[in-house]
Image: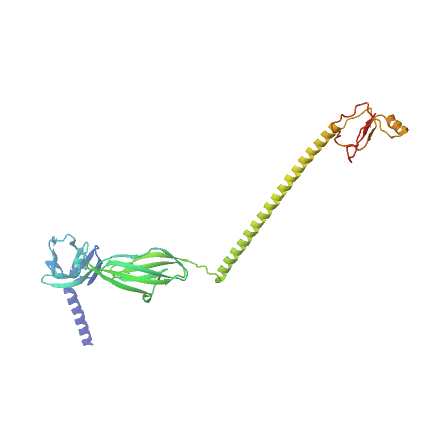
Length: 359
């Protein structure tokens, strides 16, 4: 039992002794992007007079326990006093705009005490883009997308995402173009079969980035209409046929209506012309009749019996109408005077004779 207590006391004493004398540099590894701020903290529990910060073995900054940080040749390098635990002295090295020349081993050297070293990594964030931009493809066809992640350091991770879902690395390839002034460019090709409209993203990242950079394009898928495939195709075909039939029927109705209208107009014009001819003919006949027919008050028919003549003369204003020619031809002979009783019609020929006697 005594041995156990003695061993425990030794462990505690050893821990307190090491902790009191131990010098700390945090973090042990730091990765930042070029142009961003880098901070490393050096602390100790022992009294000290001079603290020197080294970068890859070269002096970067000197701190005095009495006067603080001394001016350095690099305006981007400074230090601020930190807040350490009770009984510990702490100083923070600040690189306001980390550059690629700052990457490497950073050492905190408390002269006469101890020194600690940490690793500083400075990375480059490049650009990323998908060539070709948005595009429209036929459903079922394959589309090829190419992405370029240019001017990164170190070599970036490159991946793809479709509608928010990560694409398996086996479905695309990545190749390194080569360094340019120490920077790296990566390219990647992705082949997709167009089944539906999608949002496609190309991603690139390094460890210093909280979120990867992305470039995105929209793939619009258009359904391809093939004859005899699918209910939609049949419906479209039937609709087209019905539309053609309706159009043909409409044209036929228009043609029939036009023909009927033309015929009706022709009949109307014929009736109008016939009416005009009839009116003209009737007016001409009446004129001829009026010109040719004259009443002969002294005419006495031959061969009629006396009583018939008396009967005729006995009727006042009676008219007996026989058949006479519309126009009396006398071949130049003068018409009989009022005192004559007969008209020579021997040369008239087989024409109807109209005899009118008015008393």
